[in-house]
Length: 328
Image (cartoon, rainbow, N blue to C red; front, side):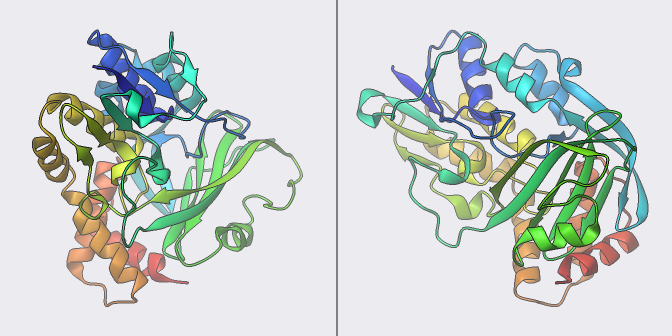
């Protein structure tokens, strides 16, 4: 069986490595990235599940950890938690060790199976009706003074400061309500049109994140076990709609693909079951976009989402945070 992995980001690289570890040879296709770090936009944040998933690829997760913090300032409220950032470029590089990334167009007819890990492009699967794509901007900076680990909600999105080192940070913003640049600019964390005094910009980029959720991102498979395209990661909506976290869900989707390698129906069912919690998060997003009335059950969804990401948010805090998220 000839296999190709389309997309050389975190999920595609993870798929390539797990296949290689099983003795399955695959060719991997990628495209030139114009960012300084050579990868697609990502805030480099992750959760505790990252450890087991990286170990499953035969790597040591501790090697890629940059910073671990025990709290985050969210809308000026100190939230205890277990938060971490990781070196995404280094992880991808190690996952792809020994691979030759093809930069030429992928010929579907040349392969028995293509694994679509092309993210929001979803290049080899049908387009999604009602796709929800979050515009985001971000910078990797060094500063002369330390900054706090911080999240600010608003505009059906949020801005963030994530520590990468003592004086290194990932600063960004995503919003479904409009251009994220003015909102980030208003916070005074960074200058989107220049550089603040004492700030050195290492990398700056923009992109979009799919918040659609898996159920609304079907089909996951076109074709069958003998010949077809199977999607993984963000291509099939495996991104938390409220948090925008896609690293861990993307890796988990690859594991589900391998567990259901010969059965597309079972693969689809397993993805929907594993990420059924994303459906409730998508419902909250839809309510925020339609300016619907927020309820206690929506706060519970945000609370559970925060716990999944390592933040200890209570119901009262969740209600306040949802109200902030709904502000324009």
